[in-house]
Length: 226
Image 1 (cartoon, rainbow, N blue to C red):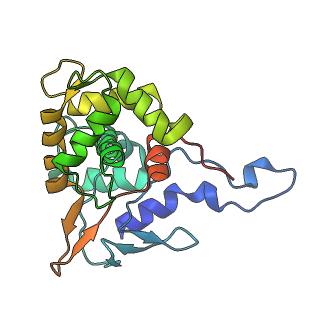
Image 2 (image 1 turned 180 degrees about the vertical axis):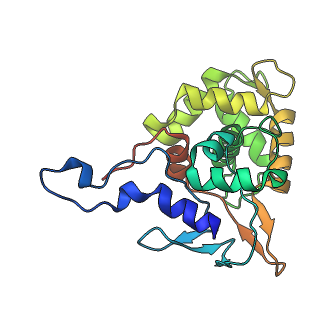
């Protein structure tokens, strides 16, 4: 499997044995190490065993999201791309993977703030409650300062101004620099349709929201201890 080989070879630095006095033989950071989503699993040797919540099928051709930079840099993926050019979208097609990931996790942060009952579905009542809590002046608009304060109250040091700015940019459809009730409601409707839930092959519904700490780590605003 090309996918399994690419993941395994990209993580070779993690597998180096610790050798006293020989830093080059110790486990090291790998900037090019390929990551996978929650539907995939690797064993302790970083060999891919499951894809899309099912055992890896060596005969199946999988569709995966790969940044064009990684596609060119990773030797296994690059070789596959050159041999199968007709299956590879142009470099300027679609949107960058990092942009999509930032938008995804900003949506998660909005849910974290507004979803008082923890169901994953944000109601108009919950949106009203969020505005009542954050908008003390009753302007009907959430500004960067108000959202930063709300994040800090909820997350402590994790509630940074940069995260708040990205969240406002995501929801600010009329480009005023603030977010009103209608804009936040529209964002939540989109999220409920396309992100918070997905249908499996058997028709069951699977919840896929992350915890607050996981969201912050994936955005790079929390350090992983240990």
